[in-house]
Amino acid sequence: SDKSAGPPSATVTAVAFDATGRAWVGTDKGLGSVDDPGGKWTHFTRKDGLGDVRITALAVRDKEIWIGTKNGLSVYRPK
Image 1 (cartoon, rainbow, N blue to C red):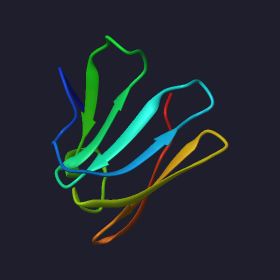
Image 2: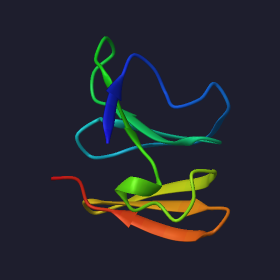
Image 3: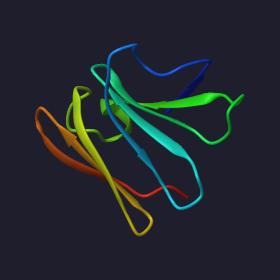
Image 4: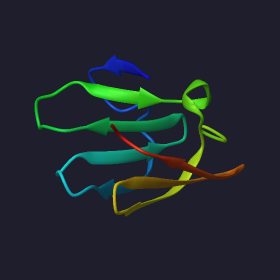
């Protein structure tokens, strides 16, 4: 993952919020997360284990982020 000032792409395809209030944003170029309004974004791509960077759906279940992509399903477990 890397840090940036905004989401991975302006094309947002899915949004979800976890129990801590962190926003998870799926785009056509990867997954991004930000945990406060003025904070830095963290980007996730294939190198972080995503099946594809083209995100189609997001869901939060317990402490897992379920990520639907054009190439299947990925699950991320934030620390």
